Image (tube, rainbow, N blue to C red; front, side, top):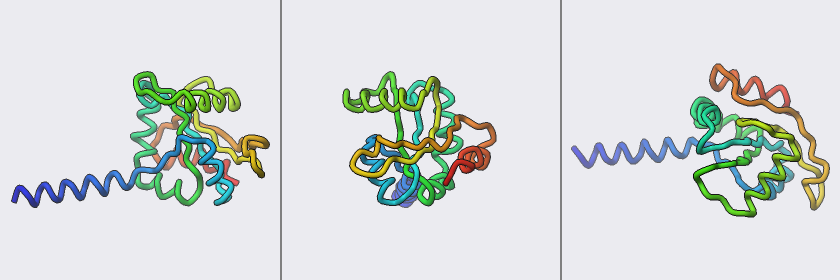
Amino acid sequence: MKNILLGLLFITTITTFSQEAKWLASFDEAAKLSQKTNKPILANFTGSDWCGWCKVLHREVFSKPEFTKWAKKNVILLEVDFPRKTKISTELKKQNAGLQRAFGVRGYPTIWLFEVGDGDDPKKGLNPLGKTGYVKGGFKKWIESISVYLP
């Protein structure tokens, strides 16, 4: 009986984790995928390990299977993180700071929807489509706040 319960717990855990959306950390990787799929990038500017509203947004929206389904269909996900406790590479810090300056982000969470430029340098010709942050009301309300900007 104990083995059956452990097996069910394992399967449930795998199923739960597989429902999480896949966020990329590399702008270059996200840009290439965006160009290939013709989907805009949804960039989540976050302080993942310290920002209270970022954690609420993750819990209420980004961790939901409905979000994962919506994201796979509509956008490429890019996490632009500014953690305080978790160490990230110098290269990633530099990339994230550059994106923060480029989009004028001053608070977290800030979520930008944008298209990348054509050609070899996707940073040239970035086309911001719109932005949002935390929206009270859960998944449906949040999706409404960003979907108005989808091309």
